[in-house]
Length: 72
Image 1 (spheres, rainbow, N blue to C red):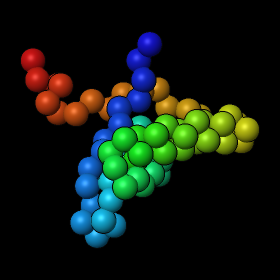
Image 2 (image 1 turned 90 degrees about the horizontal axis):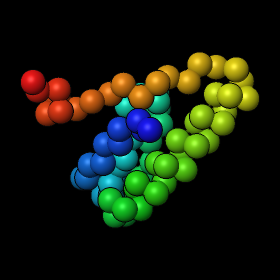
Image 3 (image 1 turned 90 degrees about the vertical axis):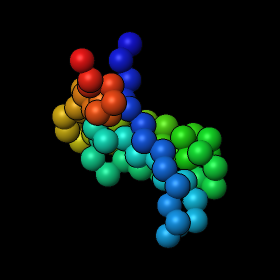
Image 4 (image 1 turned 180 degrees about the vertical axis):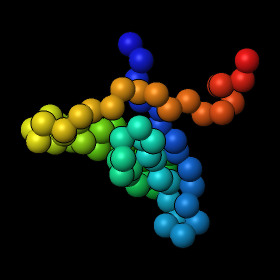
């Protein structure tokens, strides 16, 4: 099964890690470690999808691929 790509990066401004899912607009989370940020964004993903379903909004298919994986 194909799943959504997750970006995780350190934010100097926030002094912690940010995780986001590019295919799900505004779906992101914060953690003091990369692992915590990942756990939190996976919770946010479930809430995002549940909310979209409840409001009969479209749920995008996983499509984002970092450029490094797009090389032929």
